[in-house]
Length: 250
Ligand code: PEP
Image (cartoon, rainbow, N blue to C red; front, side, top):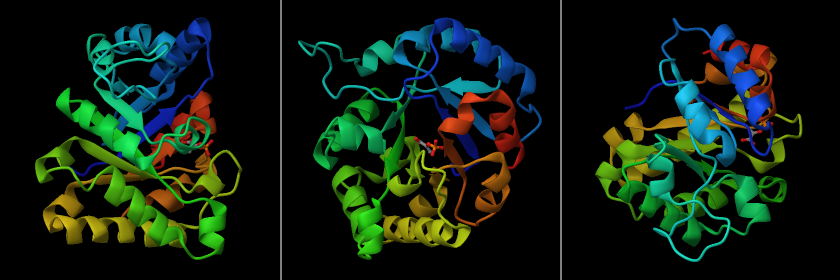
């Protein structure tokens, strides 16, 4: 069901001790009276302890990635059941850093999504165009392909397990933010494509987050766009005060 979500992607930051410190700060500083789902995605090595640490709080935990296979000879990889067995039932898939540095194609991501669905996990699926795509006015086509090849094979009921994050690659970690108009335009486009492929109810029920240099200073304006349901936050999620102010902006 469509609702507000603010998720922090910690990427490859924070060791065990630092994770514990940041979680303690977040527990102290994050609002508890807002109608918003709050999620943090620490590194794999700290997921189990984070899940335990946050068990009786209003903060949920997500993994930043997982492998598509059930198990096997995939050195260094993490499976869906490894995650669910430690109480982690949400996974971020398709982040642009995974697509770019680890060659995760739409086809691989579709497999990952299928595995996550099979394990009844919720997927935060990231899509976003690169700067050259926007400059050549291909941004809508890129998003269309990412939706079609990564998600449009799913059944209508699978969409209850999905959250989308629109993250223009040129705005991630660059300090550059898409304008509220650009964000709204793309979120409306995404919702429209989902309505065309499925129906209005699927399109209306999906939460679509924006990601790309969201900060306390710009969060309110971005979150106020009608098709924006919250944010996927990178850098600012690593500072408790900043993350708390972003959550307050919902
Ligand atoms: C991200 O990596 O998902 C992200 C949005 O990063 P940042 O907020 O740092 O741009």
